Amino acid sequence: MADFLDRLYSPEGEAVRRTVPVACAIYETYGLWPTGSEAHIAEFYNHFLTPATHGGADYGLTSATPPSRSGRPASPSARAGGWFAAHR
Image (cartoon, rainbow, N blue to C red; front, top):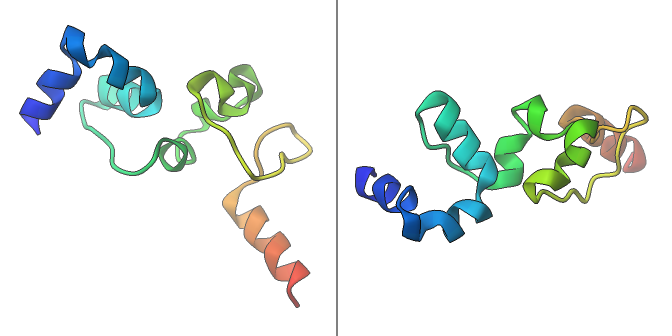
């Protein structure tokens, strides 16, 4: 893992870093490289999915989930509740 991070944070790794801005932000903040997709990681950190970040678009995130009335993506539990209500 150390070799991966060394390569990622070298000048040659800049193009790759641009494709994973959420993972890089988590690593730079906590010192641990996260696993999972960018969108999945962002679901656990409210900062990435706010109106200020255009619902995550500033980080290259897109969502197939319709936004809630507050302008933020609907929570996983709200999405599940809607699915269950539609499939009764």
